[in-house]
Length: 141
Image (cartoon, rainbow, N blue to C red):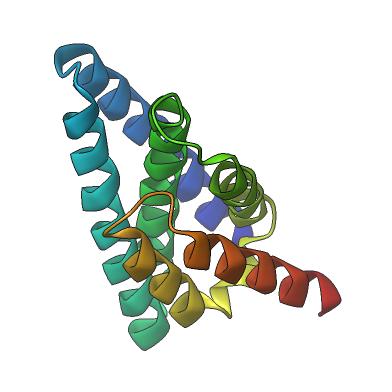
């Protein structure tokens, strides 16, 4: 079961990287990067909520793929806005989603709430604090 989820996660991440790279090559404006980030924040939030309601691993895998694109966009957008705090926490969150999805699956509602905060501002400081709290809580479990 874990190998199947991991395979789905890896395939989804690779597909999203290819799609994001193609999108970034065609659209070379900061606004388009922000739109891509916000679109994936909405999508990830929906997938995390769907996972919390029905427990389908595919929903969680899709959400992780969306989070990966968001993480990449933060690095692209960081040149225009001081977002080091969110970049650090977000990278750590993504790493935990890949390395320990079973731990974070228990917190899918909290992940959806974080995505909701990020739908309006990719450098949302409240989201960074919620990510840090979630990671601390997960590490203490």
